[in-house]
Image (cartoon, rainbow, N blue to C red):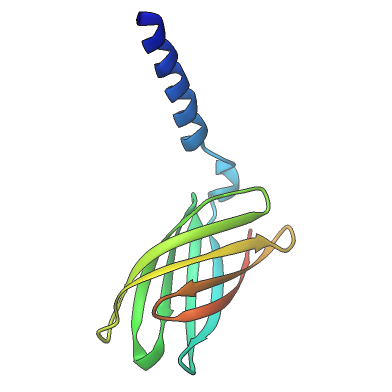
Length: 129
């Protein structure tokens, strides 16, 4: 019985360690900024964002003059970084959900594509320092 409990605790600990292990922290000390242009319902939308430690913030301008902020969570994989997020926008647009992916195009440049329920589909370009 004790052996089974110790084994389960060990397996759970290894799983949590793999899930929450820091990844390339020194490479993420400087935020990675990006700009984004997209569209929804015939309106052009804009945003700027920055990412550090697999968390991001994006300030956006949507249709009908709606402005808002999104908080993003990234999953760092070797080449691509998918993300999901939630935000809040003015002009009675309310809560927004978003998701997308960023891909490293070179050592210092990345591109991405995403969707935001208020700002629509968008393309992104950013830099790494």
